[in-house]
Image (cartoon, rainbow, N blue to C red; front, side, top):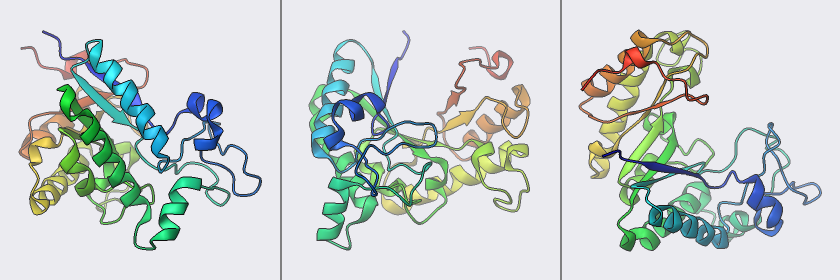
Length: 253
């Protein structure tokens, strides 16, 4: 009776990028592989052949027993030298239609995933930047909450308080105010989905259970989960890259 989620990192894929550099994000200057500040390579989100590759992985993952397929890094890169970056496939689309843009590249990808996986029975979820619930733009990574909503069963904005900018909603260090940050973010997300005609219950945020810009223990984790409930939602997930979770933050059955 364990519900198992399989997470797939999509466009941040150093292995696939080195095997298929013709589908990868490149440097504008010399057309070699672009890398972020961690040295990781990306696939161009507009490369439709890579969409098929992702679909095949998702189908295989569902076939071996995962209940849900969770798609992460479904975005354009942001944390590297963005002055020397070239998206061969996406830029071709955008050049052909100036009104297209990164957000519509991603929306087409979301629609394609949904269409190709619809018959499998798999539950689909999308990991999004936390500020997709509060911003009106695509954060320059192609992610718009309302564009993702029709194509996934769950939307998982990463509303880690430590990842919000200084003075977000007037808080000097957002990591110090987990309830306030998560509550504001989820309230705004609920309002966005209602306005778009989508079910707010799709929102199932990633919450912070790691120390960054503040020490996080049971009170801080519970403050976030309470904020989710107070926003009228029922589901959430915890993230810690080291997989060390705060047991006391979780209630018994």
